[in-house]
Length: 335
Image (cartoon, rainbow, N blue to C red; front, top):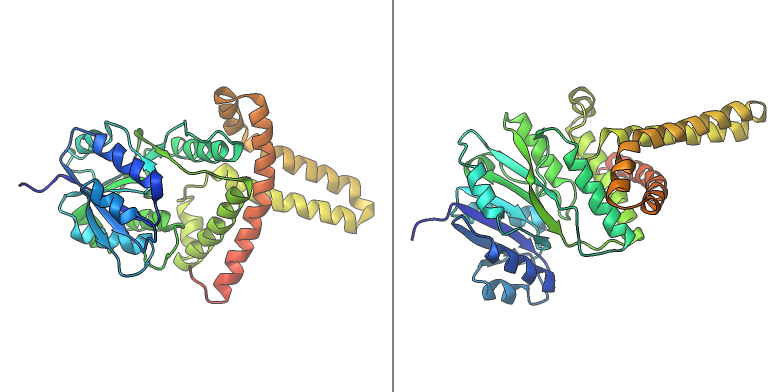
């Protein structure tokens, strides 16, 4: 039998029923020759049995080594010329594999990354907000990006192996996708954003879970930036999945807090400081106005009000994560 065109690589750890649904969706995707390579990263549930049930090539790792390590191992074992990375909680469309196969007919194309679908099954605010935030962030990016979103991304095997793969310093899911995408760009390769390549991310967020995710992700982003050199970030511009208006919003929020503090410490300047505080907050609103309007079109104004509150709650959490990451880096934690 000829080797498949595409190898789908899925790291899984205790994937459960969602993982089985992921494989069901993959098996329903048509229009390309493919294999499914599952890397069981120390599951204690029946993930291995589920993989066997769907005739996947299963590799049970001897211990939990993290998704970056699992993906790298999968890439070395892959038979397909195209590596398609997804997570165990991703639902592909029926045309996903066919779309990828067609895209890579362009021999000059090296790597692609897709986007999250607008609709997800969880109706609670935090899950909807996080999903729409991620979707909008990617839709607003240029056609060529400096990241490799591992929930839905594909690359030529030959190029992936030459890069050395994902940085295994990241044990937990973090910013390894951004790190890898930036490394691809430094090596002269381009990742193309495919807005028509959509998947559903079956991820439920509570408000606490959303804030916790953003706290640790901002800490990891700071460490990655410092590890690679702050100068490269300042000169090269924003090469992350975080929208520039939000990054500026974080800086403005710090200035607003400083103005507020100055008004308390120096009562004589209280009015001026409080006016500055209000101005900074208003500018933050303006910077994110396009996103809020986008939400209003798709949801309703009550959702927008809650989104605005969530944003102003999230920003100080991100700031705290930045300081946490900076302190950790100074103490020797590079990841």
